[in-house]
Image (cartoon, rainbow, N blue to C red; front, side):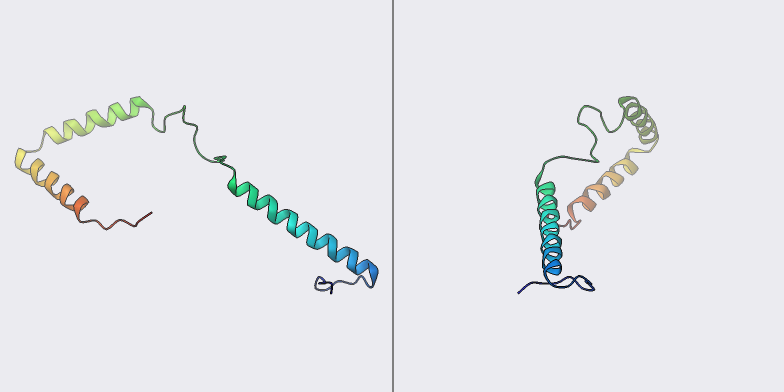
Length: 96
């Protein structure tokens, strides 16, 4: 029994050859896709040599937040830190 492609207009022996070629193409494409998913090649990932954020930006952000944090009274800083820790402890994170 030969599985024919839908709407195929080839008849007889030609239909069998065309069908075999079509199924062979499907199998080859499936194998290529399966092998491609197994390869450890990050296509869109950044290279490990380049940092995600330049150190200058990190330093500027750190200085800004230290200034902003130092202007708050101690009670407000403690309350904000407690709220942050409570939020971390009570956040349900999905399991990987």
